[in-house]
Length: 339
Image (cartoon, rainbow, N blue to C red; front, top):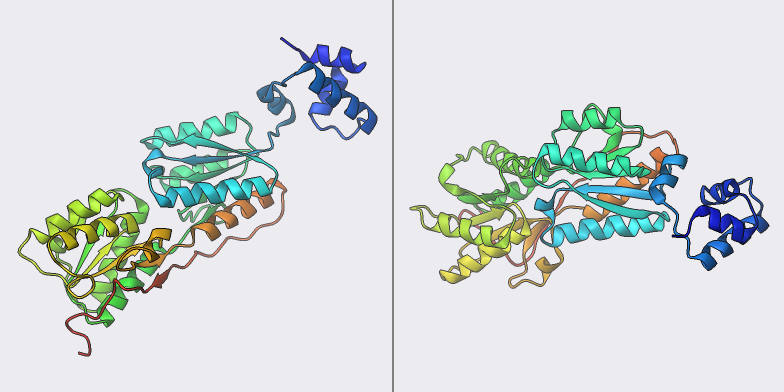
């Protein structure tokens, strides 16, 4: 096994000098530095990164914690792509940690990234609540940014969207288009995003004096299959609805499949709206109306905020990101249009 001492002997320098070169110490001359790197290449030495991180408190890496309930589907693809692309643009490596299935496991994943001496950490939580996240931030010597969760106690450490407001806006648009009987498919129970979007739906019904009816509500789990199953359950009841809102586009696509299977035309019989505006939405037939969530912008802002924290720059809290309803062919006028 090649050691640091072998590199030092090959380069004709001390072991301490090799250590300073690996730690990017500016006091080592370029000539000596070049000699050390040449010796590293010739000997095939691989430095112990964890040991170096412990010595320098820097790893040139950024951690990302995401629970694996979010791994499937295009939303996670966009999240990971944007994070990796932005991390690379800052000349750093991305380290992914799995938060698995509980708040305790999410905390363990964050601690794992801290133990690796990541220079900063982005957290996309599923189970940890705002108080627990603030506690982790306050206890950490490394900067942490929370994505998709508002933290009133740590407003500079969060990047979030107005899920309730843009859900309200989407349902309000349906009401103004003449829809009164509007069904809704929720996301996974306990998900802050799902709960916010449901609150927006209920808020719009209340604003326009429309009753909230439990029979028009069905639970999903973000997947296409759950959208299909939820729609089948809605159609099996002694109810009718002219519009259906699914809490993400995957479930909306599953819903469209089931509506087609029973001979209901979109939007002639049922208008359909999803969330997230995934790439497939505009290619689906009929093209899917969806609330566009600015995932790319949120991730870019998260990285900028994180790097600014790492470099001790003064920061202000960020305003919430707005969503935008993209109207396509799946949304039409309701039975009460013009009333």
